[in-house]
Amino acid sequence: MKTLVSVLIYSMTSNNSEIQLIVSNSAMELNTDLQLKVFKQIEKDANMIGEEYVVDETQNLLSWWNQLLEFLTELIEFGDVRNLLYRIDVSEVKIRQIGTLTIQDIGILVVKRELEKVLLREKYS
Image (cartoon, rainbow, N blue to C red):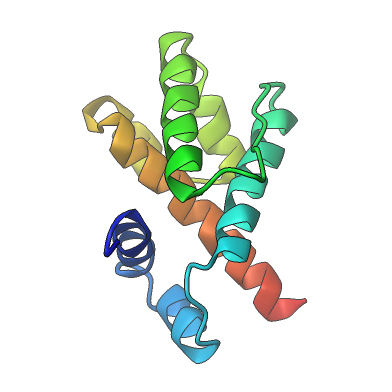
């Protein structure tokens, strides 16, 4: 499964040299523990804006990814996706491009930013 895990880790690290450095220096792969931390961080931020989003710890990365895309689709339908992106601290430039992005692009933005936060927290804690 060179799969979703590889695609996600590449897309999450390819544009950010600091995150690439953290990942390579710590020899950290996108393992199950790290995956869970990233999706739990999304859960926390979603709940902070009053949205119900629960990550089932017994599921796998593909299930979490599909659940995230469904959640983002619902937020888009109700016009609330920008609130989540602001909460997660996605750049204003990316938020302005939201109309031109696919749901997968938005999902990658969310996961990428949450991965950055989790990795930086682990590095400095």
